[in-house]
Length: 526
Image (cartoon, rainbow, N blue to C red; front, side, top):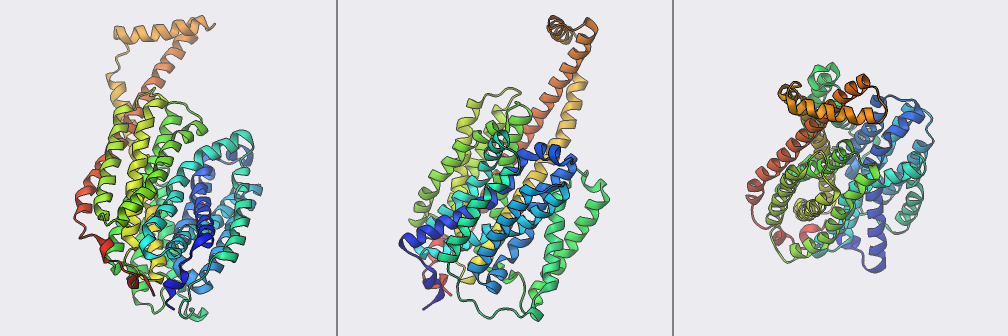
């Protein structure tokens, strides 16, 4: 019997496998964002600086990105079921150790190990779900998997905010433990491994490839996470790591294309659908993680919302995406070309960004965001499944896992690039806008003096002396200027991201033909 056929599941067994894989994917993705809202609490209890506690997020991301390209090879070495179960165990044990950490660097070390376990969960979940469904239902399989990927980043902040508000920060890690234990038991009972070819002997393992991969993506992820904090190329560390990433990538490509048993099978990128899909995955990651980052940041820093309020704002959009996923899957199954759906999704995402550009002010109300974010949910629903279906549609057997690893890594890197670009633009634009506003603010003009006096009288009525009230009034005006400068820099980011997605549309439409029609059962088998 051919291998792909033997991995297709039916009935309750497929339901259990699908739920297990989705929960594992959700565990991994929620943990990328759940920590963000607990940073302040961690600083206080661990006595860490803001820069040190930032490593709790960075270490996890670096562990993630290093392991993702290696997942296909590791599955082949140890068997997919065993490797998947071991990754869940590593993730779960490290979750317990993170919650019990007594020092900042102890927590950072366990977060890195948790990231190594978590990176495998995302990509292997996608492969397991894809191969559990017959080829004609692949789009529906990607829709189901996509729910976890799209909803995960949105669930993190409100869940983290709720836990921090009602318990303490270690519980953001402890909640992984019961889910992890159940997932391990279900994996060992129900998930099956394909029969791979020969395992690589220890003497033949591509140790140099592993080292070059870790150097390349680890350096790149550090640069993206810490570049803005370290003022980019004014930091010698950033310069050295950019050089390391460049040469690491060059020698990694050379090694993997010449070595007999490479750690990452780059030859799979000869598949034109996968090449296009990895680029589109990068762009989608840019928009998905970028917008998930910028909207809570705006509502918390400018509007003064709590982390829980900011997170809950994103939930209707995530639910909209969840409703859209099966609808788009059915449209794809009827033969509508993927590239047209992706192009439509990108136009809709541009409209969402331009909509944000129009509505944000220093005091935008929560009701103003509702339909804009629903539109975001519709756009992401139009993007995720067609891009994934396009990427994996003509891959065979073991190549599905390799392709899923590439698209997963590129989506993660796209998110890192997006957040790095957003923070850099905002930092630079904030200074520019503040300078412009201050230069136009004539403190001697009657309107400005009237504003200052109004604020001063307000302070005096609260019991301040006239002199203290005047100083406080000028400080209040300065805060108003800073807030307006921040809003203008947020507007710039919305506009730039909208333009970026709009520019991509013609290139997506130019992708050749409807790939869906090329797929038949024999093509997707070993």
